[in-house]
Length: 83
Image 1 (cartoon, rainbow, N blue to C red):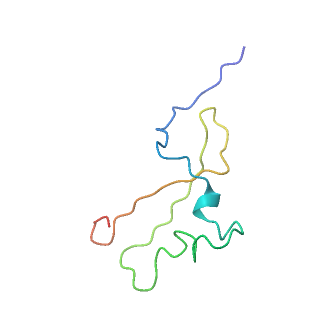
Image 2: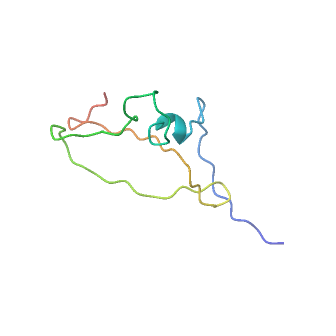
């Protein structure tokens, strides 16, 4: 019998899960929910601070790629504070 190399599970979302359709209805051709999708314009020409790019891949506990994951990130502002 082959041993599967399971990955350690991360804490689960207690108030979700939220699917991308609910967060980006305009992108999914569902109009009338928001004028623009949440997070569509996170920065503009007046936004201070260094720009970063975060890349990666999400795997489930068995090591299979998850193609529809939602990742919540928190980024401090240029003064190191959270809004």
